[in-house]
Image 1: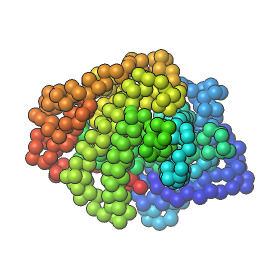
Image 2: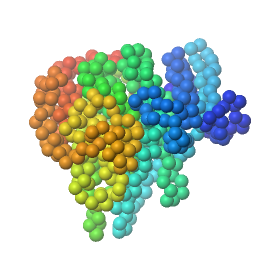
Image 3: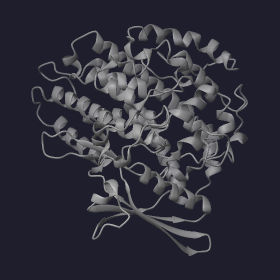
Length: 493
């Protein structure tokens, strides 16, 4: 649900307030205008979810997607990092027209994307200033640490949410950062549950609240490849590719957090020519940043097109056909494959040398986390040999990702891939192109000519081949399949 949000001061707590809401002194008030029963149900679900997520009401997790809860430490991990419902009201303002107001606790901080723009400006000023010995290494270390802090702090929050819902709109605008005084570590929180989906209904049989028919939403720059195919052609076409369907159903929040962490890393690094002391960024990090900037340029271009259509009330079916014809899903899939390959090579470089040469103690944990979080056409995880069917296995728990970010891969929480070296990454990548045709044939595709991606896994190659062959080719995805597909671009703002 979309709405306008204000900050308000609590004059007198509601008599029904309890838990975290009872102590709120300042709240955020969200007003949502609902023009259909479906929109009204979505707004009411947001209110119900915010009430359920009160850390003071933590109980045992009921399913495997969330993390075990109930300890005081767990409550402290998420206290103040997500909004909690204080009060809500629904008002009928006309025929088939409702106004829903939600008052919720205010999460401290500013939108992360605004903070990153400030940091980008500072890095540009530093790059143009006279070289300072050691500055580039310090900025690199700070960037790795901040990105790791983001993951460490938000994994318990997303694990708590994941007990009952998928957020579906994890991005740098919905993550808040409270920087605090100089030298203090930043504090991260997450807001805006307007696109959240009920976990049980999302997974359930075909229905208005299942993954098949729920409008695709969120900032498309943080979508995996499967989300683009769902947007363009709908669930029936996506279901033809089990790996992609599994990616869409289970990894939206995981993948989006990985991209946000990588965005924080990329903005925080001070790029420029090697200075007089020979202090340049490590080659593996440079390759990763280059892959990120290429991906982000493509993603921003597509985002601009979707946003323009949404804001102008344009033809959404025509937009879907245009995205399909422009191979949006393939562009994103290939960009993500390059990101994963670059992360594998950066980790291999780091494993083979001094950690201090590529950042600090946060370097290896963050790179491992990125490989677990980022999904490229269904390929994910640390083990290049096992990434091709990773999305057909249960995704890592948020607790497991937290362990990995803390540098504790031996916990076993991520599964066997957590302790696997990526030394075989280069050879696995080199053989992937040769095996792409066979892999594509395994999913009913004759050829994969567009997948000459150095280092792409066989699974990525198969997924991209399946989704990028043009109309009239062997995919069976006709342009007509895109028009009228479920989901709209109205949720991309």
